[in-house]
Image (cartoon, rainbow, N blue to C red):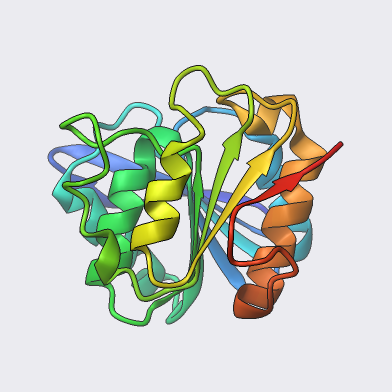
Length: 201
């Protein structure tokens, strides 16, 4: 990533929350569970990308607040938020609690909530335009789960990526980035219709 710098922020439950700040342009915060991310490398070419390294952190309520504190420290008032599967619940909590700070939300194959469905998530309270992506071959979370998100989130775009499993970033990196970038740049004017759609090879 160009112009990257690795820094440390507030301590959360005795742990340091580390992040990478790279690129320039409109701000995007990526909640990352994996240590390496091809998506992060691509995003940093077109946006100012803040990647929060959460691969050794358990999703906790305090972390939702830490996202906002990190943005404040960097002087970022508004930003787009992207979360990998197991971090989706954290991103949703932050998007709801942050007012209009989150301009757009992207959830990559969001995992089930604690009771096995998304029913205990306050999805109806998400105000930001939201893109929910699943791979058609996802064997971890049924892709049909996306319909529940699309039904309950007021401004939701549910999209399937063909020939991708649960880790869309590994299976179809170029297709994933193309649709995410398009959504971040256009939001409600996103070229994929509001109803369920699919990204072909």
